[in-house]
Length: 90
Image 1 (cartoon, rainbow, N blue to C red):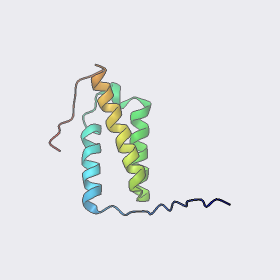
Image 2 (cartoon, rainbow, N blue to C red; image 1 turned 180 degrees about the horizontal axis):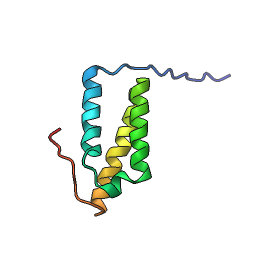
Image 3 (cartoon, rainbow, N blue to C red; image 1 turned 60 degrees about the vertical axis):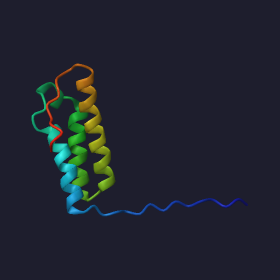
Image 4 (cartoon, rainbow, N blue to C red; image 1 turned 90 degrees about the vertical axis):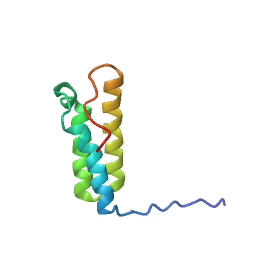
């Protein structure tokens, strides 16, 4: 019989600073987003995931939602759908 490897996922707790940094990045994309971008289903789904992940304290799910939001916004700009509305200073 072969031995199977068991992977145990450990829940890591995010610090207050990590949550603040994550929300700062998210809010830089959410605030001031053009209406046509904010109306997109994927944009709304990302905001919903971020909100639920924060409420549940799930840093991993928050990170997935944040990555999806950042990718969607960046793709919208690179596709020429709109101009960049967020600043990298946040």
